[in-house]
Length: 340
Ligand code: TYM
Image (cartoon, rainbow, N blue to C red; front, side, top):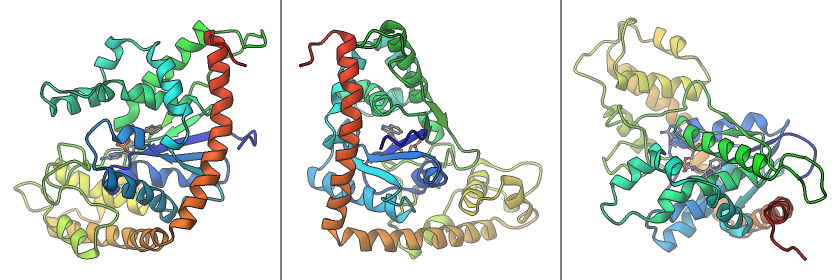
């Protein structure tokens, strides 16, 4: 780290296995940056415990996330890969930012509103303050670009607001010059694949926690499972695809296929006009199977070698700590903490 290149940063929660929404909306879009940018990608285990986790499964899923990043094409020689909880500065900066965030702005986060509804009267406080931890993740590294799916846009806006607020509140560096404390990051949201919908309810986002069987296609699903899920995907009561109007289920399948194949929506649609839904389902299944199979196999292979993964995580956390501690130190000084 510290090459003078612009910084790209992103992360996935190691909750359950990753699904095609995580891949198409996020990870796949990290790859083009590997050569030109300094890349920082990590597994956000601190975020995962905002909802209840089985400790053993969390540990396993954390390894699995890092293995999947590599299997998806994130070359560890070209990116810093690490686990969030191994870099204490994330939680430390999150506290400082929490003291500068308002209850009002956090209450407006739609993800909080959605997720908290599932918790009745016992809403974990972490679910509420979670976007501030995400802001800390990003601001700690002087991040320029954050490639994420559509659902993270609001969190990125909050991150930008917090960065600007802090820059305004603490304009002078610890050595006395006027300089912005934080780089204000920009989101990068792709045109296709930014919002992959559930295969069972195409009006709602594909989500790891969706209990409906077949709603979510995971990167560790077998070829058979993938095929079954796409074949049973909900479309609508019609049977034929038309150029004028497509139902949300049909749109979702076209978008998934377009995103896997790096094509645009209309190019894929044009192949199916006048055809029965079944063709679209089967082709999309095959496209997904062909993309997922090598990722699944490589992930399994990497997971067998824990010492390889531990080695990558060690290099990653050391690089991340060195950079993050510098930024945190400057924040602490500007805020008025004694540093010795
Ligand atoms: P998470 O773990 O929910 O999702 C990881 C990434 O996958 C994207 N994504 C989707 N994209 C398209 N369609 C979907 N159905 C879909 N579901 C998820 C998300 O937009 C995200 O890019 N708070 C974040 C993790 C995070 C983070 C960060 C991201 C923590 N700190 C710093 C970027 C930078 C989250 O819960 O993502």
